[in-house]
Image (tube, rainbow over the protein chains, first blue to last red):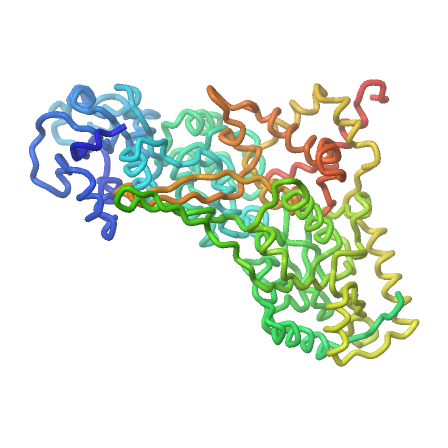
Length: 260
Length: 374
């Protein structure tokens, strides 16, 4: 539990990522002033000019580990943080840049950079939990604002955050959405995907893209023939799992099954 | 069908007007997102005239009918529990003021709601939820308030859906009790009319206000023939008589592994089931820690959290979770509440994304149980 006598110090760290999850914090708008009152935002390069110093009660970590330098830096962040929470698909599953895990990154570097020998990069993009111990993982690409606030308030109150790991289907049904898969014939990853977005895409007649990674007990093998029957060929079924959460084990294994 | 009256479509509109004049919010079937779902009804134009549905395991499509029937389809993805036992219900709020904690219970919302187009299976489902939520020592005050002021207009099913099996469960297709009024829609012979009977004093009172005339013997015979035809054309069937004993004697049957390999553990079957009543509670607090509230929301025995006790989930495997759901629904429900928990509406079959069919699972266990011919 946070020490309620002193204002808890919050830090926001960025690793390999697009900044979208950090921006969710700024996107809190109305709640942001309340947040600024409840915690001391001690380090947040996206919003302040503060310097890295001292220790932090709560560190929010965005991004994945893709360089030797970052692999060292995350250890320093862990040492300075009483609680470390990873936010978003990059930090929890390696992110879209995790696609390098299926390819040869040296080949990419040779194509993209004039002097690839200047590029110090790792062969893989890996989640933070592969490098240091993580106290809580918040899923999503990007994370949901209400869930980020829930994680921070739960930390302040010393309770477990309510971020259910069940399927997106449950949220669809709570919301009253008509199932796009059953009623429209639209392929959807909802049954195997972790809730958190509030079933956003199905509410707008789109199938779920799996932005929150695998649900707690995903059965991708059983969903597969249904996706095929709705017109997705093997290439599509491989690609649909190789997006923001390509490195999440359940999605990686399922996409590997469809390798040519 | 004694005291059977007939209404024209204008007469049915008069029913809507009469209910609204009595202060009821009228909810009934509407077209939305290519499905028939329950929502507010103001005029007959809000009903899905001329539409029907095609239902199979994991499959639902709307298609046009050749006539303008207003109730010519089977049940859709919603059930009445959305209104009577809503997905999210706040229970209380608490405020930290000076040195005091002030707890305010959420008042029970007492709304006058008329349910229009309730099918026989759904009347049974409502009766089951009544037993579960109001029948024991601990009554659900929110459910009680929402049930107190209902006016139920049932509709006898003029055709069976592809996943219907109410005839097997003895819950339909004819509405027997639990309604204020019941309609049977007749669209043949170039005439669109509804036979209507009252089931309660308030139903009789409302019926007396409507421009109704006595139904002819031919019309009554036509309605009876229609119901017989519906009962004979169920898309599914389940030999329900001994299913409790069958399942409880086969808790280690290999079929549970087979169904677990197909089950997505997504929980859709429990969400669409009109009798599944399980909820979980969750607290939310504000950033300053001065206000907090507790809500309950629909939950499912297919989630890991649902059976989480100290140290882990009791039902960690998909096999354990599917078996729990099905044996509770069809077997131990009898022990707990005195009836089956299944009303044969077929929603769990239609809305399972991979089309797992509860009637097929029962059949598979029956055919391969110990001593059965293989």
